[in-house]
Length: 74
Figure 1 (cartoon, one colour):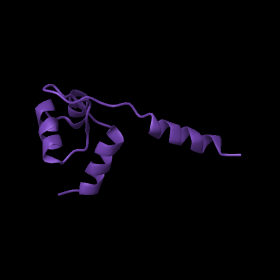
Figure 2: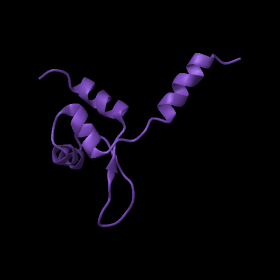
Figure 3: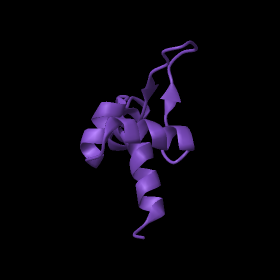
């Protein structure tokens, strides 16, 4: 029988909510336009939601943290 704690952790990672550029900017204490610029430059991972002229971008905080931790102090 699988461990319930392991199943809960997997389910939490699987259903992590998406964040807007504004929400990411608040957590990083930078401007939302900077978050979007970093996304366009490939610095921050994110996803475009649809095709068209106004294509919102959404981010997962765990992916943002992973990038920030892999960069390390500079």
